Amino acid sequence: MNLFDLQEKTLPNHYKEMTNDQLRERATQLKKKLGNDLFIPGHHYQKDEVIEFADSTGDSLQLALVSAKNQKAKYVIFCGVHFMAETADILTNEQQTVILPDMRAGCSMADMANLHQTEKAWEELTAVYGNTIVPMMYVNSTADIKAFVGRNGGATLTSSNAKSMLQWAFKQKKRVLFLPDQHLGRNTGYDLGIPLHEMTVWDPLKNEIIADKKNTISETKMILWRGHCSVHENFTVEHIEELRHHEPDRRIIVHPECTWDVVQQSDDSGSTKKIIDTIESAPSGSKWAIGTEMNLVNRLIKNNPDKDIVSLNKEMCPCLTMNRIDLPHFVWALDSIDQGNMINVIKVERDIAADAKNAIERMFQFV
Ligand code: 13P
Ligand code: SF4
Image 1 (tube, rainbow, N blue to C red):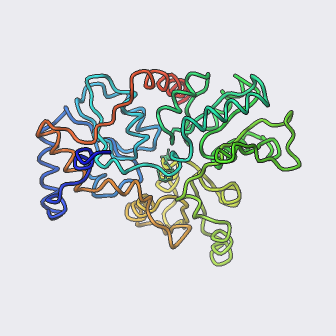
Image 2 (image 1 turned 135 degrees about the vertical axis):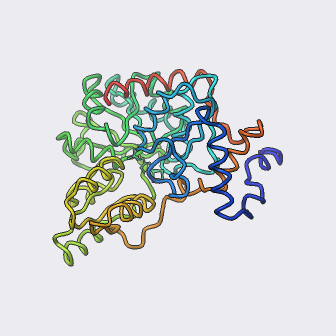
Image 3 (image 1 turned 45 degrees about the vertical axis):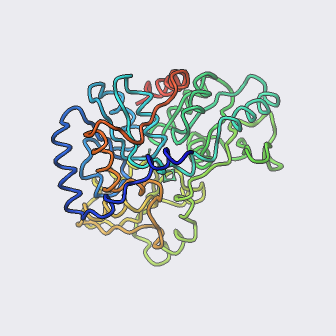
């Protein structure tokens, strides 16, 4: 990255000096000025100061769907993380421009798989298992791996539709390579009745299968990429045991990016949308502990004052990369459109986008 790129990608100082009121006023004014030329999707993990300006909020599946549907807005300011903005760019048309307000808003899980590692794994795994594997990719991944999956007959999935997507996958081939979140893979496979000894783990750093004595090649149904979410791994069985000991009547709901043990010991699990729907439809006075990102947990606490809601982990922080999108970066993105000098444009190469779109559209059959 040269100095010019860096200047382009770094928030100019005057945005840091503006007060919150000034920033909100500017955002309101520019949003109104741009009208239907602008579309702002916002993920549930975003800060309140940004969600306030979103035209549509949702989990990753919902945001992919609304991005595909809106073919009119010239500009999409995506309030979420990089892989979500890439997906929006893949699903919008050539005339539309997708902007991510801060390019540092990545996802540590998506960083745990790159194309080179995936191609290497594919070579080694097909040498062991033959032509029996279909690659299934959690959307929390880069566009070039989604394209690899599209080229190899696989599909993307999210935590909202992981179960039906795996059922689809097992109709295509005998085995699934599940990338990059081993926990979502294990939790979903187990939910479908696949025992743990029929799952192995692929270590992309060592380029090898990690299998215990019970795993045999012929029995293996799922090969789980050794990736995880550094936010959701902070919820542990110890948190659940402590809570059950002191408050046995508090129900626990977690995101399926949590480990298998945590999901097994919770009362329920599901995507951010499912967590929100469950809490909102719960009876007044009910008590909940939630195992997911803190911006969302705090919003649920604020919006449901008739319920007693806590985080499953009292020490929990927000997802740091989601949190990179703040009001100053958001206003910077708006200003850049207004001044005709757009910053932080997300552009996926045409060939990659075409193959990745195949993988995503296979998923859209199951929404
Ligand atoms: P959802 O699809 O449930 O919104 O999850 C996205 C995500 O990144 C969770 O960490
Ligand atoms: Fe990625 Fe985890 Fe943050 Fe979701 S919560 S965006 S998986 S790092």
